[in-house]
Length: 348
Image 1 (cartoon, rainbow, N blue to C red):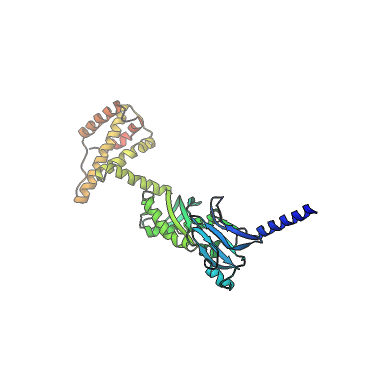
Image 2 (cartoon, rainbow, N blue to C red):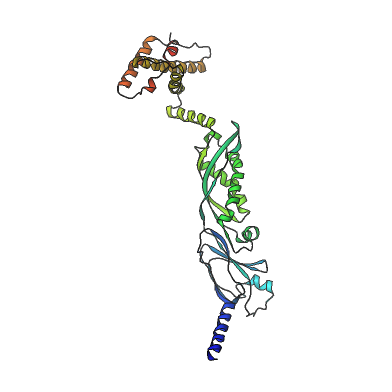
């Protein structure tokens, strides 16, 4: 009998302890959680209980579906003085001393890092130079919860927990939706996007930030790690890079393009020969590049000017220099593969 009475008393104590909560806190045991509801079950908050809100957290009191009070980092004693809005909602007297029942939601305001975005399929965009083009891009971004009231009413609601993973698809969709707007507003030519990834990222942030703010979120950082251009435009970009490598001199650029085309011409012709003959063909190609450069430069100054000829002496001088480079191993056999006969015919 005594044991039975003791068990009943212990059960009653446990029941009382279970009914009233005197410390409310959240330790964020899992990463990526944006909102978490304190598990009250059938328990009530003891008047004068302690609410612990850690740095990078906010706590929101919701009573019967209506937002009451918001608490920032610190230790708060829950009384009528610290819960004025909740007190008004429940019409309590100033001297209330009874426990009360409300839902408490904790929100994490720290940065959620290394979230990924990218185009699963090429995105068609409009460019002022090329019209419609298709683009692939990817990178990462970070976001933080900035407005818990708005996030609670618009996104998380009464769920026990809401994570970044729950929002991942929506956030990436918003980013891709505004990708075209970012390209248009950036003012960056399409061919220069790959070389101006920082400016491109800033443009995407400016275009996307309002949509994130409408969900109670703040976009902290965004990076563009790669921009893939269509193959045909990549070739144009490669030419532009090549021109930058040789400088802005038109003559040098023509020579560069002519030298680049020689292996292709040789392969197409299928002609062979010795090292000297190959050197002659390549030398003729370089000489032809000089002639073309001079022709363009003179044409820009005097449109009626005639194209100057290339003498045999100039070709032989070039051949001697190329032979030295071949001997020293600077030029490879592939670089001597030139369309010899056809190019030599252009020399007067």
